[in-house]
Image 1: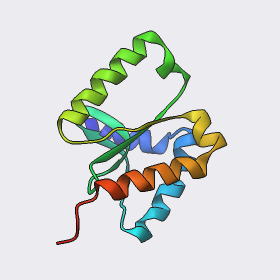
Image 2: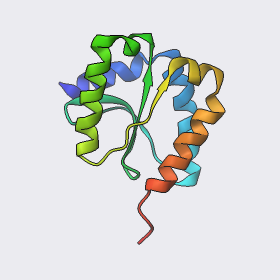
Image 3: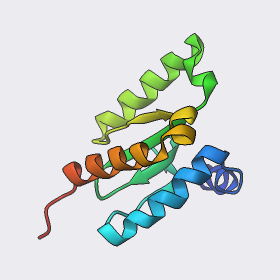
Image 4: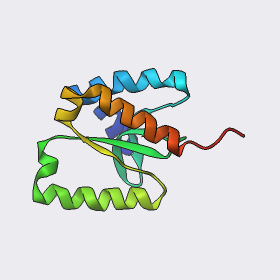
Amino acid sequence: MANEIARRLRKTMTPQETKLWLRLRELKAQGLHFRRQVPRAGYIVDFACLKSKLIIEIDGAQHGEDGHKGKDVARDAKLKAIGFMVPRFWNNEVNENLDSVVETIYRTSEMRRDPPS
């Protein structure tokens, strides 16, 4: 069921998710492999780099509402409990400052990567 939902979400990404996805794919050259709309811990996360144990969430205005804030806190806590770091970015950050968002993601991923064996 989660895989079906994830597949549907990959086909209907928001404009901000699409913008970021195109840039995250470019990080493959630096050894960072991101996946989009990934089932993890009972949730479907926007983007994940499993090697760095990093989940990226892109939030729209609804995430600023009280009812949604609590759900996000619980979700992040559950993902952190299984070892993931969960930075969140607002849609307007992706729209207005995409380079900075990608740089932050890259630096965070690099810090969390396992050293080569």
